[in-house]
Length: 368
Ligand code: SF4
Figure 1 (tube, rainbow, N blue to C red):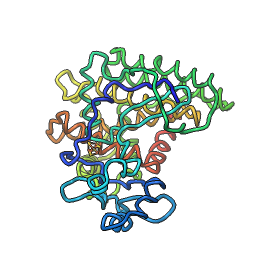
Figure 2 (tube, protein in one colour; figure 1 turned 135 degrees about the horizontal axis):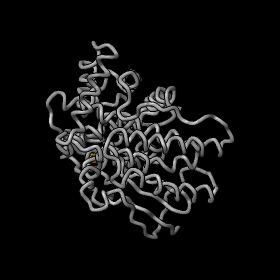
Figure 3 (cartoon, helix red, strand yellow; figure 1 turned 90 degrees about the horizontal axis):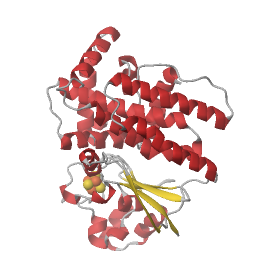
Figure 4 (cartoon, rainbow, N blue to C red; figure 1 turned 90 degrees about the vertical axis):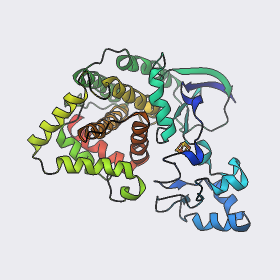
């Protein structure tokens, strides 16, 4: 079917680094296998078929890599044995698509890149230098055959969401946010608006948002986020960089009282965002905006406008925390190192609904 297709500006620059990838998506998580691919692997003959069948988990959703270490179909040369022997079409759907992601809203489709891929994260960071900041969409009309994800059919509501997003993004991307306090104010304002909108759609009359510190969150809230199932000991094997970043957090703050921890966090933030600090605030504003861009139309299905903002605030805070700690250790993160941090964080958080639910609950307890 022909439809309008919008594509984020750095999307077309993506090409998989394959065996040269320093942080391959073949490890660190379970790889879901769609039913059609699983059926193909069950029928495949020879050693490849035996290997694929042994690698496939049983249960409701077949997957590779039950232990989330490395995909059992990956060969010692870093390449996928399925792809090498039978071509790209033989891969599970998720491996064929990743890190490209799309939302088919019926009247249009949006395509973005998932930053859990280190190459996509790098392209995202590099695109900050583009004249439009790298977050503009190109629109064209083309054929689209992938099905719609949800089933809401309310064109007026979709048109309202579509109109609202550029207005919201403009607040963040017009260059006026130059202090953490201004970022706080902007996020609070859109969250409060979102709450009222949510109330009117869901016919609830909950009050507005509570004013809390958002950038960075208080040390108590950071601690609560770090105490969710986001951090688990197996990260030592599945995401070593992220594991080191989390251990750095515990080493720094574990023995401090709340007051000491808050002072340390404040001092780090002040140093980080000083004129000669390692990364400008605008980089975090831009990341916050991209989180909103990617999740914005999820509200078309669940009307949870506030959740989108809370999630984006969590992601931005967690990355900021890890970058503050890196600065404290005297590490200078260049673009590849920052891309690695973003990719390992997103792999762990964006695709881990249990961790996200727990984190959102902690923030909501104070903010909503
Ligand atoms: S993480 Fe990205 S670049 Fe690396 S192997 Fe996967 S898709 Fe390719």
